[in-house]
Image (cartoon, rainbow, N blue to C red; front, side):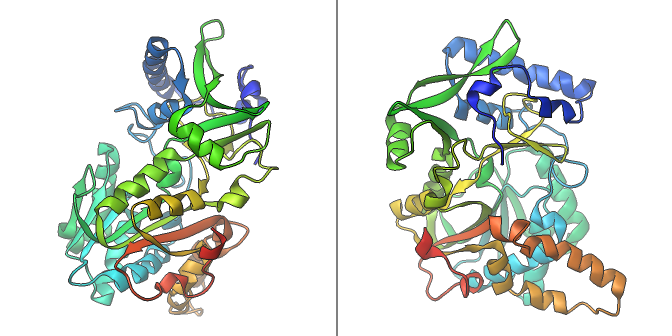
Length: 399
């Protein structure tokens, strides 16, 4: 991934951005409204941390990328997630859920359910296994996404809709399973840069002359400085620190009395993430199935993501008494949960159906696509015995 350095972003838009599909008039008007909101806060505060800029770009009420009503997922959106590729993804995850759902831990909570496709696939598989939870709860702040999730469930699993509840925050006590698929990568990240032995926090300012956002720096302080020092970063190095993701893991751990938290996302263990050659970090933007490295343009119209430091997540879990029960590639996890067994249930003689199902599963398992880059990590409390998805290929020792 070729990231754009802060010094480059202060200049006119990179040439690569001129190859992106241009936003239409309505999208431009939407972007201008969010632009004005960001500039107003920026001018009041002077310096805006990148974490705050990313938070507004993604989650500003009614204007941020995830808070507005445009399509995000699938062919008509900006990117495709695993549940959109194959229903066997959710069915495999359901196998892991079924292992942990008991009469004492009978709640499943999904964080940010996207279109609702994975929820529908999990519920249908749990029904087939006769392991339905008492309640399937979706934490979703976006009214537009809630409506899409409800429509998906009503269309794909109408008999199971009554088990689904939508919440705006985590319950005070959880006994069951928490699932997050491509959730942590969408949380705001702090950016730091090293130079001359000093650690700076990267932020954003507004250049009135060019009418563009540009980068700024100030000395890192407090929790961010402490976290960056732990990484022993090389000099002249720009990267992300995942304070919000760590915070969410700690928050879940504080209320998880018994059960597991399962996260599926892309990233690396710390020693790979902060490799000397990854000197520009992993920040990436997605817009209409194009990827680029400039988060300061198309504000509110594009997704902004970062890979995850899974070692930091495991440390955060340990801070609140959770055990790291498993860490594996997505391919190993899905195969451990029986995705190939489900694939074999399809009749190869029905060539059209079999080819379609195989085409959906292939990118989930291929090391050249999602199989290796995406990882699955599980934290738990009160869980005995190995988890189904980590029976082989468990890389906990590499964190």
